[in-house]
Length: 196
Length: 423
Image (cartoon, rainbow over the protein chains, first blue to last red):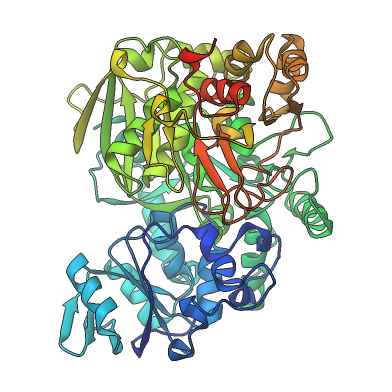
């Protein structure tokens, strides 16, 4: 995965709460067996009319946000189905970070497996970012979000921070610790017969 | 420690764990279906491209496969995915594959209890957000994304941050015409769709011990809609009997300690509950069924892992017996074993006499994929678990979530109807 350090881009404002993964990638696209190419289906039902033409009133179709790497969204983003396709679509479309007040658990974890940074900020900061409309910078090393006068710190588990900074694949990251895992298991195998 | 902490401590070989500890837990059972299976295959392909050799799973005996979302094959791609999934199971020696059209099959979460695939005290993960359902048997059950499932398949374990537990105590006996669905909708209405985010929801009290196993499963199933990591209920004699009837007798039950700690305790008096409906477009948007009696409907849907277990079908049939439906009504038992029992009990005849359509087990219309999706502006009352925009079809359709009793009563009148008001 591409290492994540600092990104700076205009932020796409999606001012909706409880955006579920079926809105992110509608179910009709779940049948495809690949990890790439889902960007074209991102927010499909909001992005395109029934005639298949882009809807002018939807933010992803606004030229002002073309090339944006940061998505701003309301509370509880990514709820609903566990489909990892939702994260694959965001990444494929070009997003590297999503800023919200909270994320659904499975979605939140899926982000790190694919090199997307979910950033949790407080309600006040999120509102200011929605209103600000200028470029946003996310510095993962410093754990800060800045935009104009706005500057906020965000929390991230140290493991996830390392995974993103180094661009580690989650599975590769764990395998790096193969020796320690084996040692741990040898130590504990008497406690639990299943740890073999 | 409470039951969740004790299961995770045992699975990770630790004497004690507390909320926020990170544990590396052995996984006892893993499930993939026809959406997450191909997702896992895609992850494997990527790993292979990166030079990783993948020729065997950690333990294929712990893995089982369900075909449920796009079956009976919705189109050519779905049909191809079933072929792919079958090949995957064969390549890796997974023998427990419930194939549609070959005896028992059904919705993965329904099979997890119908077939006793998961047992008390186990750690169970699945590639589906409603994996929480099976926690009603006294297991730690949680949904994962495709990469995490792939990881478990290869390594047999996974990291968990030990969740805090919210305890929901129900005391007393549910009044007539009130079901577990009404309780869980009431709870979600109170705590919100992220009210239990990364927490476990545990249910207990006399109201829960008085509840059947299938009703308990409705509660844990919808913990997902409150954002919960898992839902769980301590196993009791009803669980033992239920599992014994399904041939499972050997397992190591786990119970919480008497001094178990909970982040918060919520208390409910069963006698105060009433038929409850979640309005579009969120499961937290609840109201008493009686307040919605002017809402006209186009369809009633009695299906899914939430609302098409045998007792759900019995409840609906109790209302539909001798009556006719006024709107399109679809009944889809959640597994073949349930379908068969419903047939033997005469429930299928009741549905057909009422004019309802009876279909095969599938997640199809619940997730708006196929087999009865909603048109633009159509309104549906459904025994399922989600009513987000477009969940059951067109993005401008509407779904009201309700118990099978409310759905059946509404099918008879064509409007949202409290079953206590049916004449």
